[in-house]
Image (cartoon, rainbow, N blue to C red; front, side):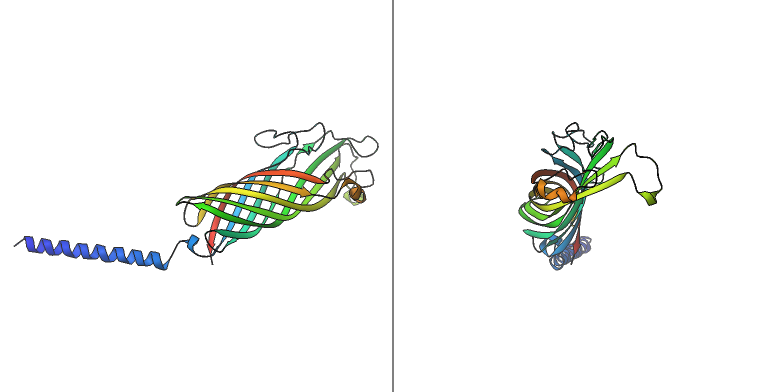
Amino acid sequence: MALVPRAAVACCAAAVLSIAGESRADDTQQRPSLLDRSHTVAEAEAGIIALPTAPISASNRGGSTPIGAVGNGDATIEVGAHILYRADRAWAIGAGATFAPEPTSDHNFGGGLGGLSRTHSRSYLFLGGEFRFFPFRSRWIEFWVGATAGTIIVADRFTTNNAPSVPSLLGTNQITVDTSGLSLGGQTGLDYLITDSLKAGLAVRGDWWLLPDQARQVSSCDAINDCPTLHGAVAAFELGLTVGYRIPL
């Protein structure tokens, strides 16, 4: 007789588990993964930018980064932010901005007129759009390729080291000379999906900067002949670590 109640209890338990499983399946169908529907991705990035053929001076090559000098040109740390709209699993479009907050400095640059003791540094700001295509995706990994296009702004900052101290109303010992142009580039990356909303990854970019030639930059020089130090076509490479958060729409 005791077997009957036990069998009944077992049947009831099996029925409850079956109903719970069906309920979870229904919830999954009603609430699909973010990758299965359109969403926005907010992404932060930190890394290194290198200009292999453009040192800030003949005596200062390789730049300054947390891992030391990189190549024979200029190199420095870079940070950035990206906002992407991902309509489906395969494509994403958006916009981004990157800049160099701690540019390389040469404290014995000289330059200008009169043999002044000068410090020169050069920073970079990119503002533009991008697209990404995702040809491969597993449960935890995504691989993507894409392109960027936008405006690059290069700021050359010159500081006179031995300038006399005067009230700021009379001027400062520092001047910035800007130049800007078109930036075109390709990019690729790998993302690790930590959760449905959070991801971390690696991004690599190669850029081609098209700046005004030297003759056209004469009007940008200051009174003591400080001029933009980049002109024409310049190659740049970026390597960055990224963290992104998916925002459902």
